[in-house]
Every structure is written in C-alpha cells, then in structure tokens.
Amino acid sequence: MGIKVIQTELANIQDLRILFLQETNFQFILNKCHLYGWADTYLFLMDDLKVGYGAIWGQNNRTDRDTVFEFYMIPLYRKFSTVFFSQLHALSHATFIECQSNDLLLSSLLYEHSQHIDAEAILFEDCFQTSFTIPDTILIKSIQQNDDYPYLLKQHSEVVASGGLMLNYNMPYADLYYEVKEPYRQRGLGSLIVQELKKEAYLMGRVPAARCNIKNSISKATLLKAGFKICGYRLKGVINQQAL
Image (tube, rainbow, N blue to C red; front, side, top):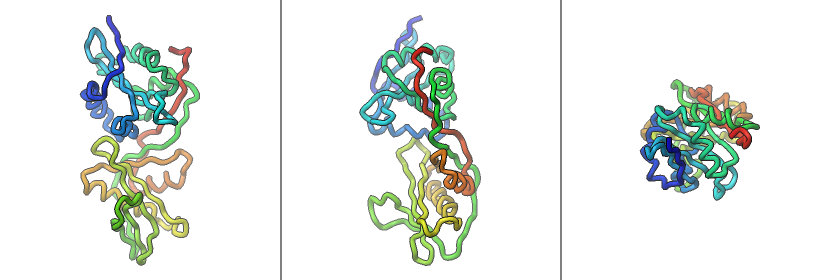
C-alpha cells in the first residue's frame, strides 16, 4: 500500500473540494483562504489514486502555514484518515488544528490529535422566517460606495442600525453582520435588521448565515430571535505531537 502526501496547486484538488463542500453542505468560513491565496494545499495519494487532500494556513499571521483547517478524504478511504493526517503533519509541520464542529471528519481528528481545545465562535444557519415590524422603521441601501455597512436601518429618518452581507464564502452562503447604535439598543432593532438582511440575502440568490463570539450572549439571543439556529462552533486546538 503506497501512501503519499504531496504539496500541490489548488487546481489539482478542486474536484475533491467540490465533494467536500457538497458533503458538508454548510457555510465554510475559511473558504476565503483559498480565494486570497492564504493557504497551502496537499494531495493525498494511495497507490497513485487521488483519495483526499488537506489545507494549511496561518492562524494568527496569514503568511504562516501552521494550522490545518481543511481535511477531506473520499469515504471509501476514510479509514486511513489518521495515517494521512500524520503524514500531512510531518510534511507541513503544522502545530494547530482549526475547524468547525459541523465538519465531522476534521473535528474528530481535532479531538483525537490535539489538546487545549477552545471554542471561539458560535455558527448559525437559517431556520425560520420572522415578521417583525417597528413603526416608521425601514431598511435602505446606502448610496455610498465601498461602505463597510451598506444597509441602513432608519427610524424617523435617523440611522439607528447598519449591516451587510459578506459574499466571499462558499456558494450559496452569505455571512450576515450588523451593528445597532448604542442609544437604540434593547428595542428590537437588532432582530429587525437581521430579519431584513436575511431577506436581502435570499433576493440575491444567497443563503444567509451568521456567527458571533461565543461570549457574546446579546448577539446570540438576537440571531436566535431573528430565525437562526446554532449549527456548530468554531474550534481550535494544539496538535499533540506525541499522539502522532
């Protein structure tokens, strides 16, 4: 049985990435690493057959390559995951694993081969539609170009909240973000702008998703109220060198 892990170009593992994204079927928040050239990719070969791939990026510095963030194997060969992970680790010298808990394969390797595991963020997917209304409050599109918060929630002509949709994630997902101005918080405006941003996402052919810091209880409550549900967590761990 000939097992090889070789560094390769992104184009050589794109077919396997399609399988990964189709199987997982969620917003993959580190998808942008491939779009911006922040990652190194590795091809897994068994007897010269392509059976999987891995991807490495820099957890704190984008020029580093110290973190395994993507790992996929064709189901038929998945029983060899630990062997290929060990080979990937030996070749890349990665010291961390970063993954989503809804990525079952890599998260299982995280728990098997790492320590000091920490949950950084909560991940949300759309669950149900809401119908909040607040008198004289509407969402409009900002006329300013390159605005970080292109959607404005206005109440009596006053901007009370703003937000947007990040589109640099895997299709068809859009990552929703928002901010309510300090004097107007605790009035239901957060849930309203989230509701309206979800509508905007669907109108542009995208599926809304969101995330927040695991300690941000207010944002968590707002997203849940506006029809999202928790679908996972963003996890990080230090690879246990002795376990490989």
